[in-house]
Figure 1 (cartoon, rainbow, N blue to C red):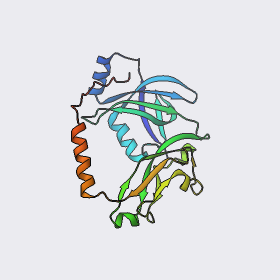
Figure 2 (figure 1 turned 30 degrees about the horizontal axis):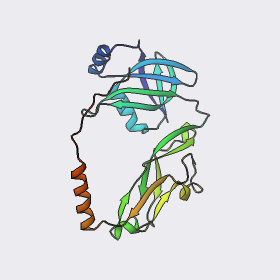
Figure 3 (figure 1 turned 180 degrees about the vertical axis):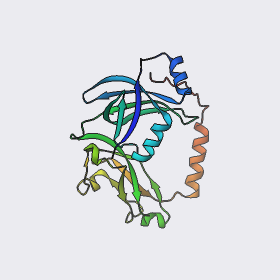
Figure 4 (figure 1 turned 60 degrees about the horizontal axis):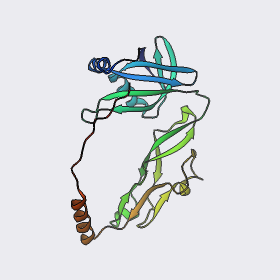
Length: 210
């Protein structure tokens, strides 16, 4: 089920105007895609966040632009690292009858045998890319790791055949592995290497999307 968000078309603006818009509780955004010309819009941040809590990151949203409803997904967004507020959003207009490619967060189910024996869980990649109709987009991609032993891993090759979704990643796309626990000597060596290579971090100013 899609949830409707009200929005208003706007003229692409200077940074000062966008800053004022955000202070008033709105998120500058753009919508483009299926039968939709790229249009600058604004949506209420509170309404967007509430909708995402209901639909999930990949859920279908019905975007109302000056009285016209468009089916969209949140294609991308930028947020303020310190405040957590959404600074800008990109909405992709979609055809509900056609499949699209989406990145879905991997959710590990169960506790592996290897973890119970003291192994260390690692997730080299936390997302998989699948091809699916908008109405069938899952909130997460579940992987059962209950039988995973120390030294074993799960790649796309192991789950492709039994998945109900078409996975677009390569077979060697690693999703989870259980490694042997590091010894005290190995941990001491890692900490030593980290302290020697540490350098002052230079924080650059990120350019915001208009």
